[in-house]
Amino acid sequence: MTKHGLPKDFLWGGAVAAHQVEGAYNVGGKGLSVADVMTAAGNHDERKITDGVQAGEFYPNHEAVDFYHQYPEDVKLFAEMGFKSFRTSIAWSRIFPQGDEIEPNEAGLKFYDRLFDECLKYNIEPVVTLSHFEMPYHLVTKYGGFRSRKTITFFTRFAKAVFERYQDKVKYWLTFNEINNQSNYDRAFTLFTNSGIQVKPGENAEEVMYQASHYEVVASSLAVQIAHQINPDFQVGAMVAFSPVYPATDKPSDVLKAQRAMQARFWFSDVQCEGEYPTWLTQYFDAKGYDLDITKADLANLKRGTVDYLGFSYYMSFATQASDHEDKQFSYNESRDLVTNKYVPQSDWGWQVDPEGLRYGLNWMNDRYHLPLFIVENGIGAIDKLTANHEVHDQYRIDYLRDHIVQMKLAMVEDGVPVMGYTPWSAIDIVSASTGQLSKRYGFIYVDRNDYGSGSLARYRKDSFYWYQRVIATNGADLSLDGEHDDTKA
Ligand code: BG6
Image 1 (cartoon, rainbow, N blue to C red):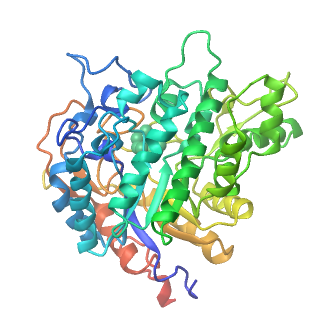
Image 2 (image 1 turned 180 degrees about the vertical axis):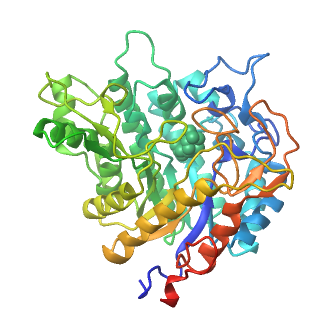
């Protein structure tokens, strides 16, 4: 850490995921993924998951923003912003179109060769997620996704293929994107995108989630071990959605409820960072009568395959309160137990905007895991307006990002939290994961495309593009709008 703040090699950049930008859903031998069978929704409803691709439905990820074809121009724009890193994912179904093949698809591998080479040409370090909500759809229909232990083998085969292929191009990896989203097991979207699972009538969704998640943490631990055998310099991280759950009041039962909520959301990273299940959770399985398939060999692998760093997204904080009749476990159900925090504002999509929560989160994770931390997503979805001159005045985005970077710097400089980098969501406009909308925009670069799939796909720099360019150029010292408040000059 320098006197004024951030280390010189801090990984400033931006993030996207394959299925949200690439399009070309059936090009180069790619198979269908879970993202290819989800329709578009509105601000406050969920995407429909269809039975395969149905005629007459609109699937926004099929074309997305055509990054598959336009990546050279897009990476050039990232370089113009000064990116040191670019986080994306590898679409599993480009490499193993069905998921259960023995040999990878060469055309898919070649695409990522070209993409990573393009990044490296500008000294942009790729940061690559193996599974970002894009499991091959065939694994869902044939094996029930991560309901099946066999999917661990399919995942590790995929991981090995890409670790070997890109061992000289990619150093930073993440296993499962926001693996802990599925702690909100009542929401169809999270179990489907994380694990390829649709809960059947009469099933206990919580138990299904714990079994699938166990297979995923085991798959992650095996991938870490394979990665280190292939290249000991690889840095492999876990990735969680860090949404802290605050107690709604200082009533002790609310505090206990919030503690259980945090445990329920973060046992995933406990296991991935520490290599073992927390005691509250094994007790909880017993109390609930969940008889899960967890073997001794699994537990040994969890211990052997702990991650090198912890990546996380940060968008918002939550709050919860106890009911009058809590059970002994303070069982937490996110769809049921969240309450509105009156101290923080909300985005147009109801996300609670709380920059201080980022400083809190960085300290909380640092105290708990003692590992380097990487903020691999942070941003605000908003409606942008393109002017007649092709400008976008997205002051709200600049405000959001600036307020969060301020808190990140406080955590790093004042509190000594080790943060490796910051890749806001998103480098360029994407298809929203939860709603499928293009109009829920996150990027520094505007893409001319609407929610219904029309538009020229032309790219335009937003005001935030120029602002972030200066933030990176000054290594985070100048967060002002006019470039006149460089705090290294103070
Ligand atoms: C995270 C995901 O949940 O948040 C991204 O990792 C997603 O894929 C981002 O796009 C923003 O969420 P949404 O639903 O607004 O796209």
